[in-house]
Length: 180
Image: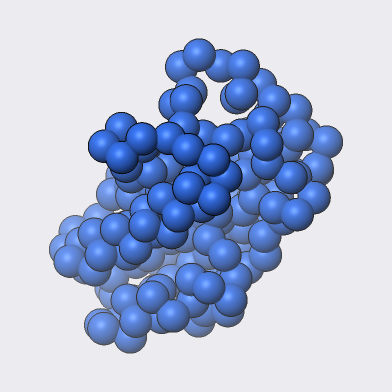
């Protein structure tokens, strides 16, 4: 069986972090998520305006890709979670995939703009959410993301689909994993 990489991507507030946590529990994946890295950078370097937040996002993705490289193929599947940006993140991910035989699956999480806006507003009021995130300032219409142009399987899931949607995704991932 080849090494397996699962990318969970989607717009902010789509439900990708919740889905990633469920997939990690189900498949015993190693998880690397952009927000954990970004929050450590906020702690070390401070919070700022939207431009600063974007700079730290870019740095977080660079760290995520660097950490992923030595982990791929060293054990359980590797799950990367973040709002990967089409047209920007394919080159570093492509280099990871080209380095060794790796089966890649993308899970594109979507949710209606109104639901994402409500989730982002709730996060902005949540005292447990890291203060560096600019969730309330996110433009849910501009933040929509699509699939990355990468080889491998693509699965789409509704971030508000509940257990039935999760089980449908898991059946598809089980099939993908068994043939990878």
